[in-house]
Image (cartoon, rainbow, N blue to C red; front, side, top):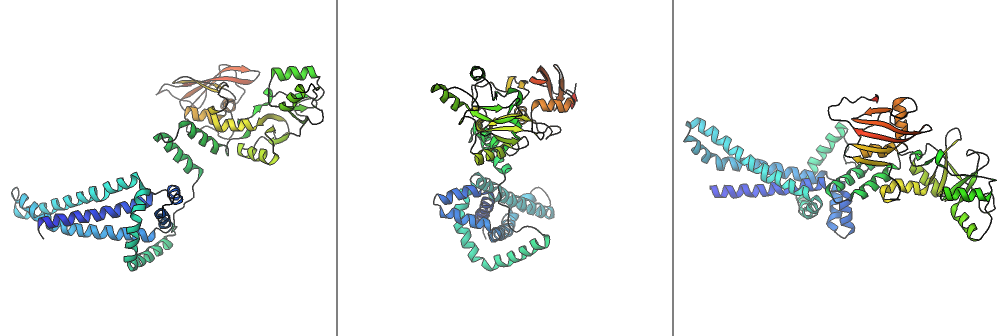
Length: 438
């Protein structure tokens, strides 16, 4: 075989090897969700690729037969074609026996380099750029090869299945998509610019509904506006003007003695009709939905759906009212800054290294804003105020501070044991960060 014929043969083997490399990586990297979208759009080849992914054993058997056969042939042809030329070149520099060994080594390295770059690395990178498109284009030729190599595929497949059983390994890959998988995909989309940052935030917040406790989004007890059952109309009107809300609990004596609640829309209609206002009037007092304080926001949404309500009172294990929550509160948690933009933000970044944060801010939001990987004693608190109490082991006072994970949390304002404002400052790099009060 002449040098030209040998080079053409090597080029053909590289092309065949590149075909099998693209076929292998494209099937492995193809996303089932994307393939399903292509199949639903009418591409029947995508449906065939999906079937290949369900039973990938025969497909990869053909790929490995092809790759190994080509690699062996490439070594044989390359060594026989290039070794004489490299040997003669080396003979100009060293003795004949050494020149033969160096010529063989140079021929081997040259052929191996060509196959690694042109038949493996380059095709696989091309296949990874758009694996679904590559897979649907190659599924036809691969099905033909599967039929032609049927006996060999069956033999090697049985041997491989036997090894899987002996080793106790699963024969099929797990196709279940978890919430972590979806969050990872959306984060990748946000980083690449294909998904807007606000959209990424909303998707993340939706999945957090399962883990965030209802107390992280409620209106706390001290901020609840409520009516006494026998309050005069003038007092009711003054309270509505001072604290305009959509719903008002009605109580008998104190907030823990709930009778129900009234909707502000019903009060508004009575005012328009020039009727007297009394919380106990027929048709005005509604039965209130009461939920425990350990429910997640997702569970509260389900309670709203079942009760056909959008307002609930939250009680603790001792049946004391700890807060109220509305459907709008839950949706505000999901939508983040897209809902009620006129409201004052709970987290205000003053500069690249400091934040002013309300003490009632959910710790999940603080963790996201500060990009904290973990928190101490997770599960023991829900808000920034709870975090400070846990770290200090007492009710914080003004100027109390805690250091954690390179940040200093300093209490700026306290109102009757309630932590109003906390200044969070990023500590200079190299500062010894303690995990407790300072």
